[in-house]
Length: 290
Image (cartoon, rainbow, N blue to C red):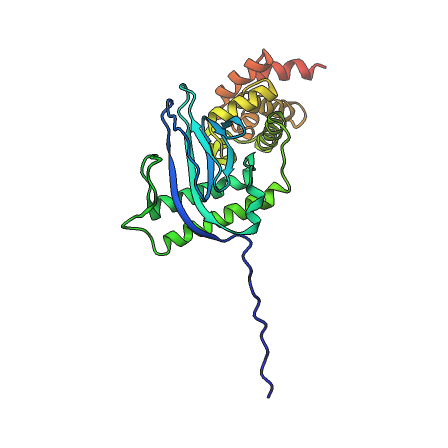
């Protein structure tokens, strides 16, 4: 009887991280200023909160919350704060000789939202697997945590490789030509999210969890783009929905209040009057005469 023949698929590695040198994840003092350095391995810097200034041999720029930059091996770079903002930065240095890393030379971009959860998972795994002290440019390596979970350092390496591969893919799909274009895209995604939740009371914290940005960034971006605050916009949408429920669907004030997610009928009436200049009952009385 002939034996079955199994084909063993060879899996090639698009990106293989050979070594991780340092990982830093901390708040930086608003007056932080380091003279700069260069080294023969890659450096990834992600601004989780705030902003930081950057200088290389050929350029100076400012990195804002949600942006990431790569420094190729042997590239001089200097990071410094502006004296007023204390940023939270995530910095990883690593050795990777894969040809695909050429994509990251000079890469400076705002991270697509699809990638942000991957950053969060990487940070969690790194904090469990290694001792991550406050930022010190003189630290030359990592120390494994005494209670590191089984396979922790390997998981950190895999998370970094997954992050790089996903970034490589996304770099071909999502390109924002300007900060304004990115803000408009983010605001549009937020309005879609809010419009789909007219029967819910949602909080800024829930919106931050959904979009993986800070309250400061989300609120300022939304206000610049839409001309009003996030919660005000959502309240206006809910009141418009409530008017439809009252007038066209024959709901009572109590039913409209419940179906638009207000905590009680009295608060609903107060918000309704704020935007319409009249109570729900007065609105019904006037419009039923028309």
